[in-house]
Image (cartoon, rainbow over all chains, first blue to last red; front, side, top):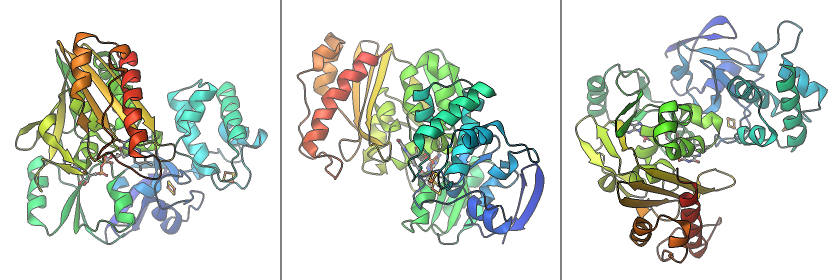
Amino acid sequence: MPTVTMTVNGKQRSAEAETRTLLVSFLREQLGLTGTHVGCDTSQCGACVVHVDGVAVKSCTLLAVQADGAEVTTIEGLAKGRELHPIQAAFKEHHGLQCGFCTPGMIMTAVDMLRRIPEPDEPTIRAELEGNFCRCTGYHNIVKAIKAASEAM
Amino acid sequence: MYEFDYHTPQTIDDARALLSGRDDPKLLAGGQTLLPTMKQRLAAPSDLIDLRKVTGLDGITGAGDTLRIGAMVRHAAVAASDEVRQAIPALAALAGGIGDPLVRHRGTLGGSIANNDPSADYPAGCLALAATISTDRREIGADEFFLGMFETALEEDEIITGVAFPVPRKAGYAKFPNPASRYAMVGVFVAQTGNAVRVAVTGAGPGVFRVPAMETALASDFSAQAIADISVPSDGLLEDLHGSAEYRANLVTVMAKRAVQSAL
Ligand SMILES: Cc1cc2nc3c(=O)[nH]c(=O)nc-3n(C[C@H](O)[C@H](O)[C@H](O)COP(=O)(O)OP(=O)(O)OC[C@H]3O[C@@H](n4cnc5c(N)ncnc54)[C@H](O)[C@@H]3O)c2cc1C
Ligand code: FES
Ligand code: FES
């Protein structure tokens, strides 16, 4: 089995993994970082979004071996100690979650969105969320939270 | 997903050697089509040959009247490229409308055209712009490259290295996305290069195709009005729960008019 090494949330992590191990399984099962979720089998829901080398990707559609040597950021890597990331704080403030299952992916997508587009309007936010599904259909407040975060940041 | 051997060759030659030396190898680019297919066990290659470290497959270069995009260039990079936006804005818009931002961060031009999904966007852009596809061994014109559903002129062990797009005078792309998958229900790319016009349709048929009647009409009058009464026959078009063949045939005219209107 190959040994896969990557920097996850700033720390170098190494573990053995089968070549077919998806990045999301590697993070959850080998590294114990269960904040990243799996919501589908078809690469469509975005519950699994993490950042690899600075861009948001679906970690269920990437092999762990493809991320060998990469910098990975997961939802666990956003807060500074007890201080929430501004987007996390905005989701809390604006009720951007109901059950919370989609939330890690939504927030990782939102961080990437605001990096590329610091002041998105509402249609842009909705278009940028094309790859993230919320089963509780809480889109309205998710959009509100991202808008508020963009103004606060 | 079944187990496989994983390779990261650094050169085209090494990639080709792996391709010809293994049981049932497959190239891996962005993985946005291949990995979902393997997860469903619809594909079970013995070896994955990842192109991510291979040199010479990257980069966007404009030289006068041609824009060259490397096979491994991601959809997001094409969408954001100043060179593409300036030379062929319709191509940047096409790339920016593929799937969602997460798919665009991984998916590549080479992977998309090698796969030749009947509803994929890039085949329409390549065919309408009369692009030339470069591989490790030859150059293939878009008219010869796309053969049918998931079928191309590529040989088993052939590697796409890049695509050269002639810069058109004007081009436009309009797609009616499937609301669930974002793939094209129908997408039409219209390009006016010199005095000729080419119209390529994806999503409607078993593979990307041109509409000669629209091309002739647009060559003498490049306006939406000129093609308003031209429709394609519905015989042989795709039919599924998302839409009938007649519905898709109608969409071809609607999307073609929008593509002409959006042409810059
Ligand atoms: C949720 C979702 C939505 C999507 N929506 C759209 C959409 O709206 N429109 C659209 O067009 N596409 C869409 N796609 C597909 C996406 O564009 C893929 O990125 C693309 O089809 C394949 O590119 P890839 O780089 O990911 O290739 P891979 O999945 O890595 O490979 C695909 C195939 O191409 C072969 N291949 C790869 N590179 C080369 C090469 N250089 N030479 C020869 N063969 C090669 C591989 O062996 C494989 O058979 C979507 C995908 C997903 C998951
Ligand atoms: S788990 Fe659904 S897209 Fe990754
Ligand atoms: S909050 Fe429940 S899935 Fe989005």
